[in-house]
Length: 151
Image 1 (tube, helix red, strand yellow):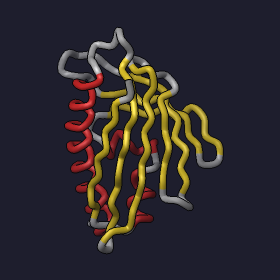
Image 2: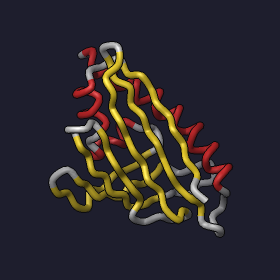
Image 3: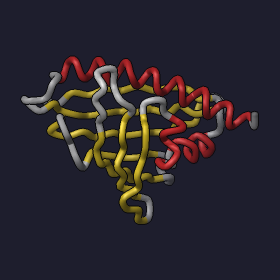
Image 4: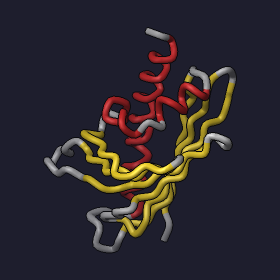
């Protein structure tokens, strides 16, 4: 059974700046608070395949997986999916960048399904993803707005 999240944040910065700063996966450990490292495995045109490694969680577990992202600047959108799905049957993520009041509304939609043997069910991982997304979006908003202001 599919589970989904849908979150957005207004960033007081031009869309091209938000796009540039949030779509360079190599800088994600500096942009997000939860990522320890990114290793780009393959890049071709607007598609990048990479290994993402999280910082250790409170239990000391380190999570890592391979994802693939394809950006489409003509539609200001990104489609991504986990190649190594880990505890998920599948995980798909869609990013959209909409101009709004002189700034940008960045939206993340995620669709996923937990495997029956996963250490969580769809309801609990949906809550966790929603809670963490709000935290990460707030951090990204602050960092991008600071960079856009030239400070």
